[in-house]
Amino acid sequence: QVHLVESGGGLVQAGGSLRLSCAASGDIVAISDMGWYRQPPGKQREMVALSTSSGNTNYADSVKGRFTISRDNAKNTVYLQMRSLKPEDTAVYYCNVMGNSRYKTFDAWGQGTLVTISS
Image (cartoon, rainbow, N blue to C red; front, side):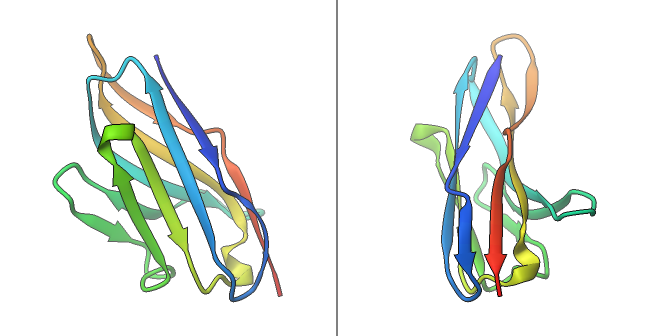
C-alpha cells in the first residue's frame, strides 16, 4: 500500500507564494508520474501540473509561468511552488503519484490540502 502526505497549504494574500509538498511512502518500487490537481469550491477537480519520470512537465494554462512542479526522486516527494497567487487559485489541492509496487501498479492520491487566497 502507498500513502501520500501533503503539507504546505494555508491562507495567503493575492500576489503571495506558497509551496506544497507531497511525500509518498509504503510499498514503492518505482514512481512514474507525479502531479498536482485542485478542486475549487463548487467545481470539478482539474489538473494543475504533471511531472513524468523522464523529466517532462505539463501545466494547466491558468498556472503557466506562476507555478512550478518539481520532484525529489530520492525522497519520493513532489513539490508545487506557487507564485503570484490569485483568488481563483483557491481550492483543495491534491497530489497524485503513480508507479509500481512489488506486485502491482498503484495510483495514489493525497488527502488534500486547502489553499485560500484572499483578495
